[in-house]
Length: 88
Image 1 (cartoon, rainbow, N blue to C red):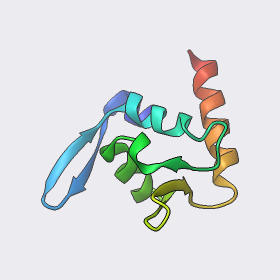
Image 2: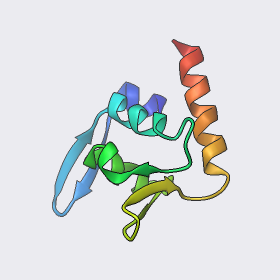
Image 3: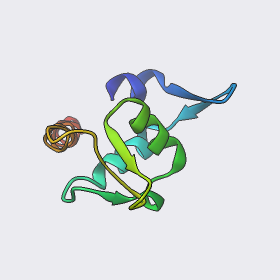
Image 4: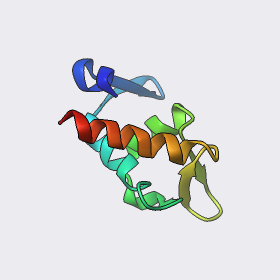
């Protein structure tokens, strides 16, 4: 996340590249601070695609929810959020 905050990042959708916003990415992770899943409409589309592409989140189209990719990811997400909060 430091890299994205310092230098930015992009995701490619089709042939076009879109910049991702550090704050939006962090807000997406905050949805999982106290929950195991989130409605797909609660997270902006670019952040959703970014985290799915990084294999952090998984989209369940049947339930229309996002959830961490593995059982270890919620712990990692909470640790990242705690570290980012401590850096401020």
